[in-house]
Amino acid sequence: MNMIWLCLTAVMSFTSVICGQSIDTSHIRVFPAMNQSIAGVFQVSSLNHLNQPQYAFNASEARSLCLSLGVDIASKAQVKNALNRGLETCRYGWIDEHFAVIPRIQSLSTCGQGRTGLVPWRASVTKQFDAYCFNESDAVIQLKDATTTSPLNSSDHSEQTHSTQTTQSTSSSSSPRSSSSSAPVPRDKEVEPARYVGSAIRSAGGKVVLITSTCGLLLAAIILIVYLKSRRIGSQSSDMKQQQESIETEDWTCVKSVEQTEEDSQDEEKIQVADEDNEVSLNLSDSDVTKGS
Image 1: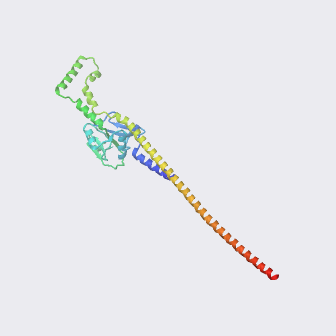
Image 2: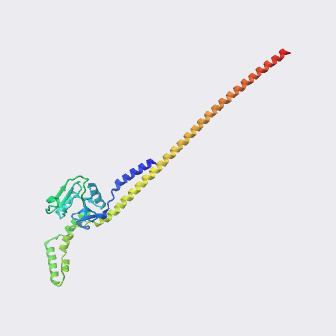
Image 3: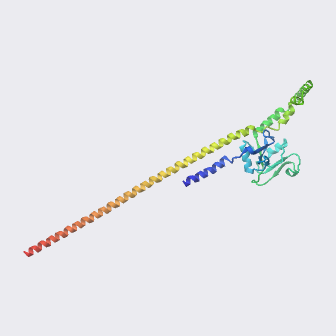
């Protein structure tokens, strides 16, 4: 029984390593926005009970957090590329190279000691920061969108500008909202920074369920194997015990038979000696009778 419990403990430890830590994604904040990223890079922060961001992830937990969202932890090059495309934060976050960074475009005394660029902090891997995650498919989509929305030649661009001016002149009573809706180019530029992978979070739940189910099946299979093996060992030990008892019984029977045989032989010898003594006595009696007569 103790061996089974030891096996179960080892299996649970192994399962926790495979499945990874369970991270509650309901108390996190994604920056720039829930449905946006820049060059595939976004920052993930933990929220406290006051719904305020706080540093809560060490290097290992930051990597696990990105994996739980269905993406990878961002590398230095990927964050630097996002910085060049406009990503700027005021919070340190872990990256793939096991150090924390802040992407800064403008100098601010309260952010990264007033430095600009990709400001690093080579702290201990146990120190808690935010996490910078990277979604490769999102970065590819953004690259395609940037290529598609760029004007192919000056004539196409002039035609689009002329069409916009014509629409604005023929609708003098239109509101500013309708005017802005007739100019798709600025809107495209606003949307271009990126669309955070909404499908990544949705698929993350399916991946977690799949991993958990696999780990559960593995655990059940190992428990079944250990149980069957323990029963087999118990059956073998029971058979050996029965065989040993049978051998001991046979030995005892043989010893008893030998002892009985010895006793019988001793009794026969005693009877023979008694018979001889009786014959001697009878012979002596007959001789005495003969002498008397």
